[in-house]
Length: 137
Image 1: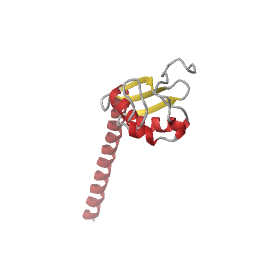
Image 2 (image 1 turned 30 degrees about the vertical axis):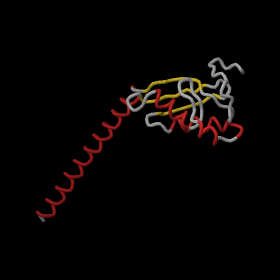
Image 3 (image 1 turned 120 degrees about the vertical axis):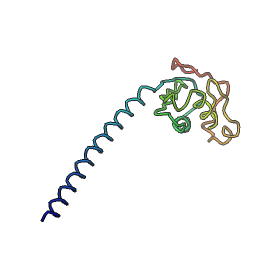
Image 4 (image 1 turned 135 degrees about the vertical axis):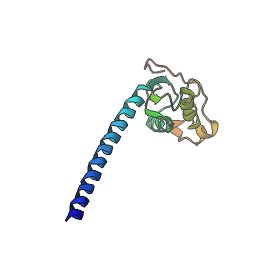
């Protein structure tokens, strides 16, 4: 009988210890998520393109950069808004990723090979203005 009581007490003690560790892990995770939010940077810059297919490709390229949490390219304004963790990436990495997909940004010319592989509707005028006012050009 003493062995049964001792076994039950040991199981209860292990169970209580495990519960305390799980609570601690949840608290640590929550703290780390708050810290990540503080490192977020918002950036807007011009990107040449024409249509909804361009939008998908440009946003996919930007979102493919580690640390980018959100990218939204405006077809009319020829402008992308990006949120990213500046401890994991920087603005030039995002410009370079978009350029590698075939699109010119304000700072980096698009890859010629990638541009030539774009669908016909996506082949933009390389002299197209990248404005931020939203006016058609």
